[in-house]
Image 1 (tube, protein in one colour):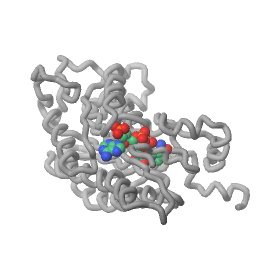
Image 2 (image 1 turned 180 degrees about the vertical axis):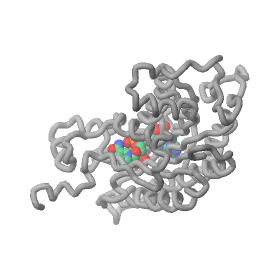
Image 3 (image 1 turned 90 degrees about the vertical axis):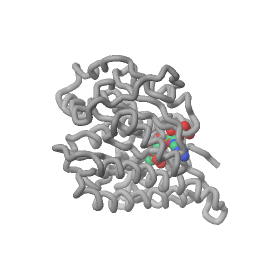
Image 4 (image 1 turned 180 degrees about the horizontal axis):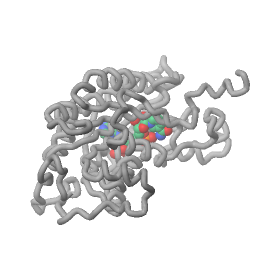
Length: 322
Ligand code: NAP
């Protein structure tokens, strides 16, 4: 069974400058940096956005001074999202669970693009670790603005063989982990001063399997179905407090971990039958949508799921009249 692997492919594929509203944000470097702590490196360079198209520059303007926590950012979709925010000038907290090297690579790419941040090891399914992840970001940057609740795993098995550990393992990480991080973020957002736009923004990374049943993956599909109602109910509860909650549900996204599935021509052909747009997605497809949903340009978008799936949720079996 897989551990932190998430392919989610059918057929078993697998500032130093502070925020203007917040005053000085960064904790001083104590000279004891272990790679897990942010370092003050002097004046923050401007985001490298001068050649970006006009629309992106607008998004960039709204993101440049923001601080973003991305859970599960050591690989795949979380890494893609973290880099996308970093490229647009946000401070990015790169959470990882077991893959420190992956998290370090993510941070390096963010820094090379002109962004900054730090890496933070935490198991989001553990209450104390989720709390520490959020509280350290608040302490370091004097607050934060966006939580990307991305960390997720699969532990697949047929239903009658599924162990309690396989059930709780997936529910604990995918659903309880997202609940814990969201709860801590909401506590912080509720205390923030009112601004012109939202006080805080949470994006749940769900899956097309919050809609599409998935045999052999009942634990995973249940966790994602749970996220759908967690997201919507929370959106309803906190919208009056000017806190925005939305979700992104990816379809089949090629990540290193499921390379075998999409690089094998036979399996790829089978998979493409489920994707009307006839291409497998990539992490940039998700990153681009996440930065828009995280920016003030999407200020009026509340309680919505964006399906980024090449049409997978359109019942592709009905393409020829069923
Ligand atoms: P991935 O490459 O396996 O990445 C999973 C990430 O989650 C890793 O960074 C991993 O950290 C982290 N993680 C796992 N357990 C954790 C825990 N207990 N605490 C903190 N972090 C933890 O998978 P992915 O494909 O990018 O998936 C990311 C999200 O997208 C998941 O929620 C998944 O359900 C969703 N999704 C993926 C697809 C797809 O096709 N790839 C489609 C739909 C939805 P370490 O590696 O450091 O342990």
